[in-house]
Image 1: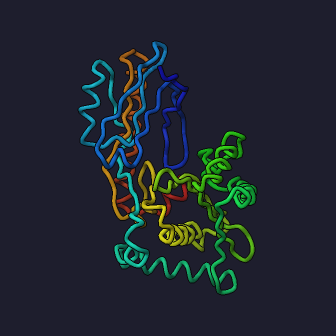
Image 2: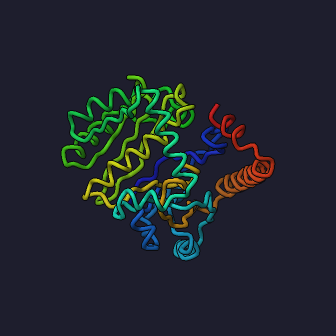
Length: 305
């Protein structure tokens, strides 16, 4: 029997969490391979004290089958998105050709601008061995402390013993890739990707807000992909759960997925779902207003401020 953990059900605007409701849940994440295959996950037995399950990256067509399989529980779709990925077997030049003309133009412009700020050449440093990653971790962790991922979501590169031990163990086996982009000799952005099987996972990313005008996150993403395309052992880049402009721009494919809450039908759980449903509906309405009025830039600043 899998132990449930307290997980926050967040009332979230972009990266900013306004409030949360905690429930004891068993999280059941599907891998990219499982999502592509259209699998229905096997749910472990539930502890009597647990509230239910959180199933993430469930292929959308399998939602009804999953709900039927756990009859008697209250189901709620928290979000829908494309689980996006990049096919690394096609070659970097072919990959660039698959991107839109606007994206290709932006890649060149942003790369040139970042290079000019560093004396005319991009300064991208790659890390893979345990010794290299010891250096990477110290630099990237200091950089992470100033990112919105850390400030608003607590999702910057971790510094816990469990994480560093796992990082060094995976690096010893050749299963980690990481990069830092420097601008004018100063760390500006980082990207950390563990390798599972033949797939690189987009796990931890961040940049110094000082360099926002240089789009250092996008520049580093392109250079990391360029590096991975040259690695025959890596076949896909998994942008993981959730959607966003960055993932849409740089992916070559995607699987329509959803995150599903399956809760015991208690009064408290029904009330929690009602509150989440109302909040998500309000956010969807606000998003439509923002799109109609063309206020994307302003909304982004508010979400990250």
